[in-house]
Image 1: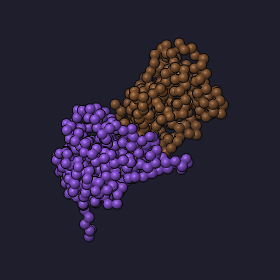
Image 2: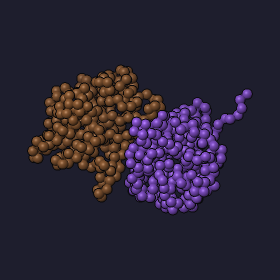
Image 3: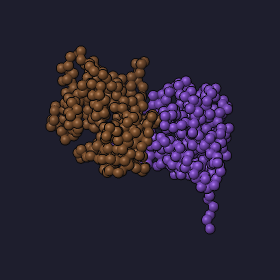
Image 4: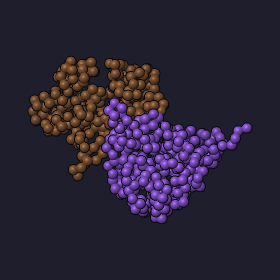
Length: 307
Length: 270
């Protein structure tokens, strides 16, 4: 029997496959097509304290092997989430990872307090990396001191696993993983999207109303794998890897590079039934390689010199 | 509940240089779909294009009393529609559906006026069948650039649909936009008659139809098309501004909140 369970701080996930925040709504949207309890976890769409409208359309544009988005974190706010979506997620036995965003450090703390007092929240993912909003968020994620401060502040008010989600839009992502670890994070997740841009040359207008957006999809995967590898070598806490995973092979690549678990985003848009395929593929790989536990795969990259 | 089907291409009929009707062996989706619903389509497993594209279900195909598949009406505007145009019998198309909120049907004595612009004809074949089954009188007002881009007129006329045309070059019906016959009919119709206006086409046309319907105190239902990432409510890309009950507006995902909206609910110039 293959053991797919993985450990993220005090949290045991039944398997390493998590739906990525921002790519899976609040999970409820997918309950008709996916048994949410089969996923290792569901990272829900980023929540602020208050409701948010998000950016005007156009919000996405397809690019080679990927897409740009500038949604602008449209969302119902934490209070409506707790009242309207969380009960249904619990009824479906989803492992709920709540992604939180703040304009200020106090807002992160307030969100963490509220969610720590709420039944049915498994972990907090700190969105300090959304490239599409001006206020807060990435301001923390692009400064080592800001990252340290926000993680420390949240750490002080919650017992839930704290997982800062890191931006790749920095020179040395590993130093941000280290700052997170030093501040008491239980894990880090990476990468969020790459700041990018596309232009309609006929009209000479930006393809997105926000002008710039975040690039995701298979196009970014090799960069994301490299960044996960660098973070794995920099910290002892688990690394949750993501960036263009579209098959079991891709998920395994991240785990070999050093990820304890993975998140899948854009590929879910293409194939909402991907989850069982990923789990079956991972299981088949472990059987083929006679590995009883998926956790044994993490960081097994062989860099030895060949004879 | 939507399903994902690897649907075989049964036939692909080119209607012009850039319009085609592609028939797919997707009986499960066809059986479950209601007029106005759509499917998300992808050809092949390649990374370009990466995302699926939305298409209204055009026709539900039947043979020997059984539902055998569905067709899509497609106009070449990009990579996926090029691939749909070039597809041949036996090719496989990933087809996810049915998705979205369908048109609300009406009953006699109410009458249905369907206003179509270009490829916006797509949802009106299945709507016609559903309305005729209920005994509703159906009118189609159909606009295109020229008579060479008006399709399936025989299909609608054979079913007793009253057809009015408009072309921008004047080669069929009114010269100009489809709003011309709509306004003429609205002006000529007694207020006591119960009319539901259904519209699908480019957004400026939908705006004009919704505004004109409101001006004549007629209800309208419009099917919008926005850039859509997933079709299931996951990505929040296909939003359209809709009036809320506090006098403001909010962005509603057209994949799950639509694609059919009451024309009066949409904020056309946010």
